[in-house]
Image 1 (cartoon, rainbow, N blue to C red):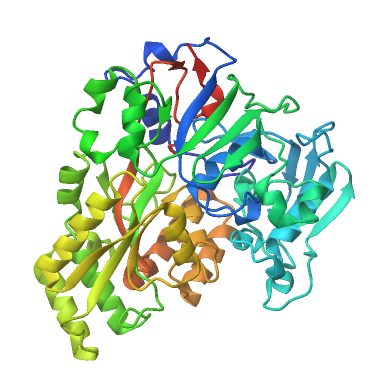
Image 2 (spheres, helix red, strand yellow):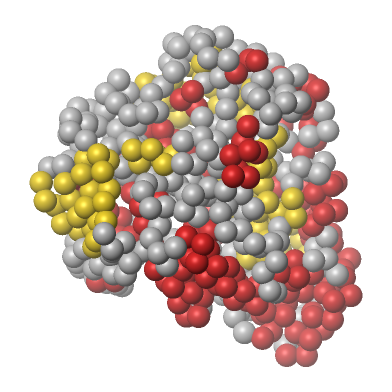
Length: 547
């Protein structure tokens, strides 16, 4: 998923701005020649994707297959430019004097793709719908800062309107938070905060299959497990206007097939190079490739509901043992041809406030002897059965997942002496359905693509108590308190310092085991020009043109 937002927000580091320019051809800090402006503006671009897990509702989409579509068919108060800075979309202004009370004014004359108006109610009603427990939306956690969230989100609550949202007129509404939060405006470009037309609330399930949005494109066809077709929305008036004739997202079961289609010019844009092509893709594609860090990471989550891994001394020892038993650099070198960077924390180094020297982070360093020692200490508390399996689930339709998960389980076998097994799922959707229903029987691969450029985005949504992307059901009052303290900081530097203190708690509990930081390694066909990737590793689809 991705985010980006408005004024008084944490800025991206200068390092990110520099790394984003080092793409295409790899021999210069300027984009390759084939990225020059111009081209065929009526060309329909084909791109790879995975099948969205759920219907396309803003507050119920938290994975990349649905997210990349949502970000094109919807737009919010703000959006994010290629370097991660915010730009106004529907917002005329977002103002606050105390970081607690916000007044939001909309630009006049904005409409959804069906011609219905975008008003203050379009936002207020959508946010209330997303927050209400009775609607069971995966992204409800993102509204927890708003006053009244606790009442509407409580189990079995019949309330559906947060007291912190007030409509002033058709183009003005106010937001009152429970506590001051300096980075609240930064979140408002994330999918969860998109507006919805009145039609969405009559039958949300049906609407999710045929959503009416207000972004630069509109969804005209969704053939499940095959493709999603997007046409240009001629009613869109924002800064992300389409420079092509549409996007046809093709659902692939393997990145190998997608790569072959790029090589044969039957697929235009691929955002993941399969591991078996990493040694040769730059030669194969000439100057039609990218290799650049972005705000994302890879992890393994071990649910807290599993026996032997519940929060507490035994579970913490076993998680630490598994982390110590993984030789991350060896996997990076063998599977990814050195194209990743070993993780040193739970966030990403391209973000402002990143710190690679957080106390406790040495648990991410490979040490087989220490791993065995920790596992033995856990056995003294509760013995791990000699015939017990420890599984690591992964989806086969993602680049490198099979290879790296198999490498991890082999290392666990060799370094811990346990029966570790790779557990394949046929698709990302199948894996996520099992994960979000909390029915996994072992660990599983996870990763995060930033929603907006903030350390908090890698912490709160993933590990905050009750958060929508908290796959392992981790809960820590101490950690939650640190998150709240960091959000309340008015100085971004002080806020980042507190968020890193929160990470010290995560290193003790290890609700997820960080592996490495991500880099986008992608390519494109001979049919297209103006191919660029953004701060979060996502192609800027609206900028692409045919040749």
